[in-house]
Image 1 (tube, rainbow, N blue to C red):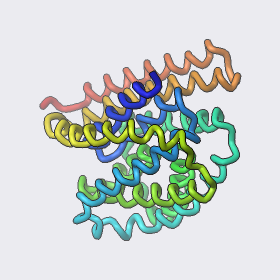
Image 2 (cartoon, rainbow, N blue to C red):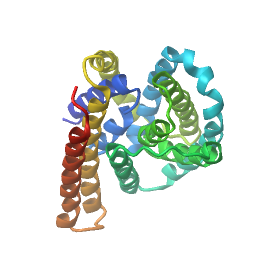
Image 3 (tube, rainbow, N blue to C red):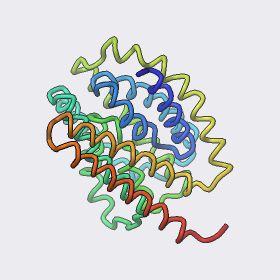
Image 4 (cartoon, rainbow, N blue to C red):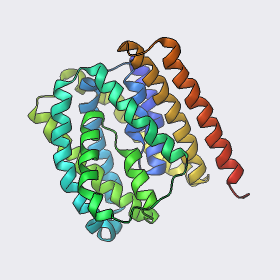
Length: 277
């Protein structure tokens, strides 16, 4: 059952990643954490994402010169953040890592779903601290897509520049994290055993996503993906709050209900304000 869910969710996540250029971990991790701990899941996903993001960067390599100077300061903070996050991951109980993953991911997804667009004027000033935050978040959770997409969408990147910037940062974070996991001895037989079940999903899902996005409006597709992601994360947060005995079942599943209602409102507002085709 665990492997069936893993294969299914990684196929869906790879399809989204093929369409949008990000989203693999932010969809895979919230579901997979219901069945696996971060210590098993993270090393496998980091190695797969290293290959996957290298491919994304390769096909968008022509836009790298356009964005390199803008993303280079982020890479400095990224290296520091990965070292911090990897050390934290080696110390913290898996249930608390799940809680941190869901707790930080949910508001980021909802901010994207709300269509927040407010460019940051001091882009260079926040680059290194932002990189540290991204590196810490990624090495602990293998998730960085939502905050990266939120930043780059707000900063007005062209489509190919957006994908190239994402590719540079995600290859760097996966490379730094893969090395850090090796240094702290994080790789295990359990992690290596699930990789063969994920690879076919990625090989089929990415081309499918690239094809599907040509047939539909990208923004509509993105909003539906975020709505699904928000529900999954809210459910995972409800489960882990009960697991950690931080709240009653009634309180935690009230969070899920609130997110469902907020999701429905954001989708309704999106389609109401969207001009007719």
